[in-house]
Length: 304
Image 1 (cartoon, rainbow, N blue to C red):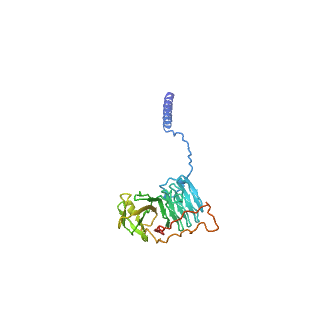
Image 2: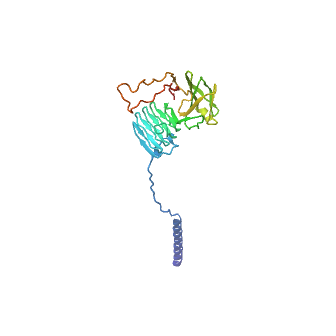
Image 3: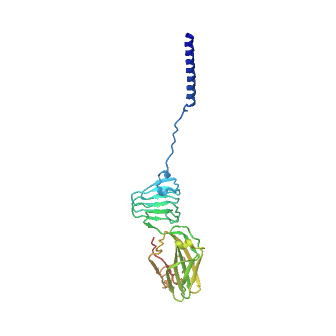
């Protein structure tokens, strides 16, 4: 009987030991490994604060100011004030947010050059924006200032300059013994429109004409060569041309004005120096021939 009870106890103890071993193995196989918390930090820059309208730009610095102030050559987030500001981007692809007030925003160097391809946002007020040779995106820019793209070029070849809302101005002058006018001008096969013309003189006549081509014509041109057609072969002729940006494509020119004169310049005194005075060089200057001034004509006002 005792042996029987001991045997039962031994069997029970063996089962307990086996169970404990199984539980221990199960716990070992499902043990959760140790974990640790890692903290990361990063400084925020202009890219973190830029609005959605400037999402395509990569900005490197933040500039804020009021009144008249400028950015740098880098691509920056530039913030104006609630007042009237004059903001000059100074190059780069800037995101310029002028704020309220009647602002003057210039994408480039403030000299009609150096503009980038950023965003100019006028905010409230009546704002004037200038691309200055770049192709920025305009938002709330009620006025767009016409600017020269590049420099004036003489002759009959002028490679197109990139810009927004462009116009091409062509000037021709002919000096001859009779009035000879242009009957047509093309640029890369595209037809220009006449703006203003003026003739002056008697025996020797001067004819000056200005013609213009819009942005669509510039884009469609197949070459960079002008093709002027005269009513008769010109004698002494000269040409000049320039590209402009932010020109109102629906109405390329506003009011125009021209003038010319044929009166000779006053002749020098018959005797020089006048009585009682001496010439600084101890001799009389050379006689000066009188001549007629050149005739000039140009558009007086551009409407953007």
